[in-house]
Image (cartoon, rainbow, N blue to C red; front, top):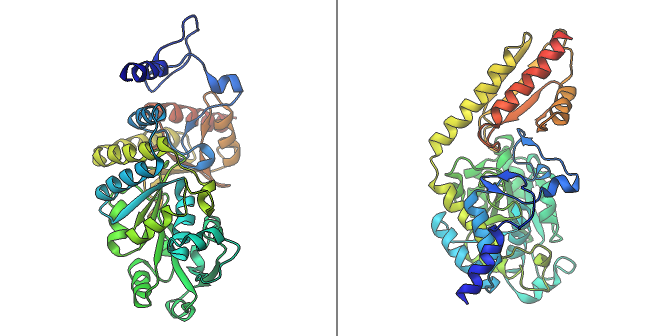
Length: 399
């Protein structure tokens, strides 16, 4: 049996005889350039952890874990339980489970609170909510497209703005109070006050922290603050599988969430299947993330951003501001703008030039700025970005 397993593992790494050498990625040589064969262009990610840009690049240890899991069978529930227990230990919470991204964690958490794990209620979601609480309170400033993951369960969203409105909205049909961490400072009711209101009325709370690591402490900050459920994306700052996420919190809700999830077939979560590769990969991603040198990583990002800034502002008429978003995507970032009477190109045209160049570089921004982060770059790519950006801006200044 062990010889067979060793042989299977060897098939993943041994080159195919007679094939031409392909790209070398992360120190690994590949026989085929699959994306090139498909005509799909790759790029340097100077934008950030956007799902449309396929998130982040997993740590090499995560890829090893995925390959390991792919070549062996386990019972899905056994692995979910074991990994959940280990993650809960690492992140100082009662319980945890791996989900298919933060959005599915939101659906699972909502379903858990509504059904309490009752098989009959689970089967009836979202069409027949008889006997369930069906209202979720959200601050108006926290409404985003991602709350569709709550509405998947058939609930009614109740919008409020002030503490007075929030308390007035609570009734016997209130299932949950939901909070978007990224918009904490935009809402009139912030973290601790929100939790205290919910506790006063015995209402479960759920906070969406999808893009909110770093800092590392956020991984346990909100469960310790008193939120009943917390979710994170797995494929953003944690650099786990892009198709994975985390649901953390009270054991009673995590256990109920699992009963709404695969391998159970007649449940709302069946379409949100997470397999052994993502479950194990997510655990390893967390282990790597918690073991890293956070200070050294931050200094590297700062130096990378400064390098790009210095190249950009060397062009007359260009200014650049280094900033760190207060909550979500809390990393050193760059906002570049220029006097269009001196640099005769729009921000949109400059971003397109970066995207269409060789290599392609993806950035963000608006009508007047280019936005750049370096935390999703492979070290060394910041020099390429700095050079290309200066070339484009300088060319527009000379033109």
